[in-house]
Image (cartoon, rainbow, N blue to C red; front, top):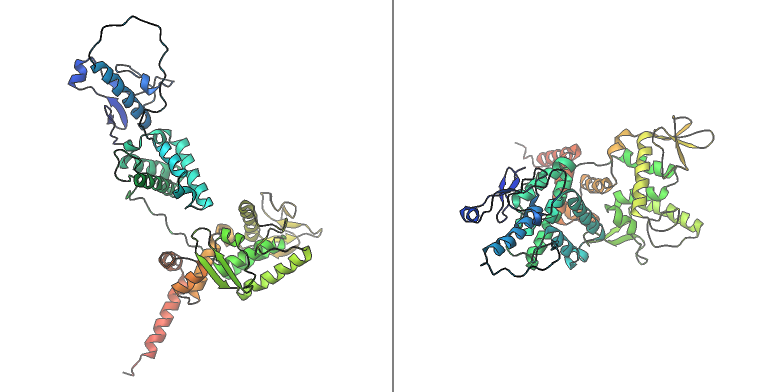
Amino acid sequence: MKRKISIPFVAWRDGRPRYKPGKNHRDMGLPSLDLRHPAGGKVSPSDLKPGTKNTGDWFGPGEAMDWSDAFQKQLAALQQPQKPAAPKRPRAKPTRATAPKGSYPLSQLIEDWKKSPRFTDDLAPKSRYDYASKMNVLSERYPDIWAAEIDAIDRPIVYGLYEDIRAKRGLSMARSTIRVMSSAFTWGLNKGKFKIRESNPCLSLGMAQPKPRLRVAERHELLTLVAAADAVGRSDMGDSFILGVWSGQRQGDRLALQLNERLTRRLDLRQGKTGALVSLPRAAELDKRLKVSEQRRRQAGVVSNHLILFENTWSPFNQDTYRHYFAEIRTIATNGLWQAEDGSLICPVNTPFRYLKHEVSAGPAAGECLVKPCPSLADFWEEDFRDTAVTWLALAGSTIPQICAVTGHSIQSATTVLKHYLALHADMADSAIAKMTAWYEETDDGN
């Protein structure tokens, strides 16, 4: 991977750093140098002197920058007029500074950014966690770039990083990592953190766009998921599935949703990710589920204004717990569920259930079929309930503003989303042609 990096006294050939002395330096007796570690070991960049013949790993950008800083100090000392030799006296061996004075590596930029209000106040907790995890991957897998000076990180380096992450971790991880870096660079530019840099090297890289994912539940798929949840005693999950389709809200917002005591027939919430306010009526299908849920609460003596509760503890769902339960319920809906003569529930899969292990045992299908297998659900994600809501609303003839009033999308994002959600849905084309045909026939002037 070729990298064009501007570091004083360092020339790059095929991505490998070297020191090539000019005439003045040759006159000073300074020979050329490959910036490399010794074979099988490591050397501090500041201790690598011109003329050393190492054959180990080549220095990365961060190490090359450290060597350049140390070499400039050595060069300045050589160029000073010689003073009379002072009497020799014992002195301690100098220690290498961990970072040259005035240096500002990428790692420090990230730490400063994470402490800023732009990160701590403006980002949702889930986004902060995700951004931090992306940077942890960068620090662990790409330590040379992590330690490199900000002013030495240019577009070729960032693009090379993008290509390497894409090859090793996939396009989605590559794009998200570069975007997080870009946010940090933009913050640093706005705060005046850099001495030389005047632009963001993470912008306009021409990164590939992932293919849009379209996954909309058919009616029988939704009913199968709900039936699977009910059959294994997780009606609380079934309530969330119905709420997802009939409200179009994200999982986190659904689990945090609290009823407004003054408007028991409506759902009022502020979305956690965007802050959008949403108020919508309780649909008939949802209302039927919630009435049964209210009965279970009364029987348990539970009073709570949370719409969805984890009924093992009658407390709000932990999102990790919810995620694990969803995965196992989807497995049951995909493969089917049977009840044996002894009352045990059987799902014919080889992998044992971890969260439903007291209620479901793997084994050959036998007994009464409670949930018919629905193999198409194998690729259904929890996020697809929101996609389903948007598409069903559009298929029912809702306008974009009407959809936004339900789901909380902005007009711009809803337009983009619908382009992906509906472009592959044949029913939309059928409906459009039917409407055009009806209009055409109504405007027939008899000629």
